[in-house]
Length: 302
Image: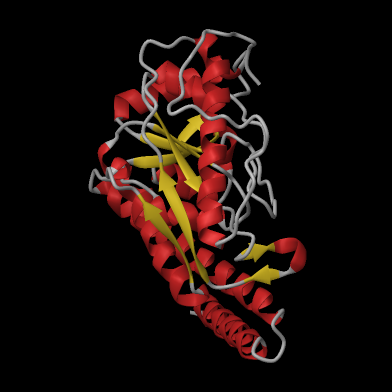
């Protein structure tokens, strides 16, 4: 009872402060940045709590594979209500709902990508995470209960060894995963991609499942942290055709990574130009092929 009293008071005052910043933003536009940051963390806290409860219930019901999808849906709608931000999905072939298992990959821009994932998350899909996170309070509980596929790098000689356990889980559970091959957020104002790490591609090849690139337009007009810009808006996502990996070997990963990155960068620039309604020059040497292929070059793993 004592704890509940303080929790209710905390959320009440949190909501009052957030609303005050929204009201202030009509006179001071930069206040909208603080308002949406506070609203986003509120939504994240509420949905994290919901995630633990719903994941436990779905695990008991034998539906653990859709636990992360259920939480993602809740976060998607909550964020739209409190921030006015949403992602519009272009998936005419219904790839998100018909391709399983697969390794979904996407460009990584800012913390707002959590909402991007919530907006497009397929059923029977999970994130990947370091196995050490299992021991983290709350987050580790949710990840374990919701069927996260853990990767153990500590006891593996290289990336390929580390991915083998995850590859086995993908095939045995028929569970897709989503990964960011850039490895970190880019925080760029213009559409660009950081160099790709090869872990996602090794995982897809070892599991023999397709890679599905998911391209998000650059959204610096909605969120650009360096200038304290955080606006409401709609951001387009495009789901590209699956890239098959059956028959490929570790020696093919280098070329597969390169051609997939070129393809995604080309699509990202075109999508951003459409979303921001302005011409964007294609970087020199970005001649992305219509589909990624392999030439069998082996330079190891990063």
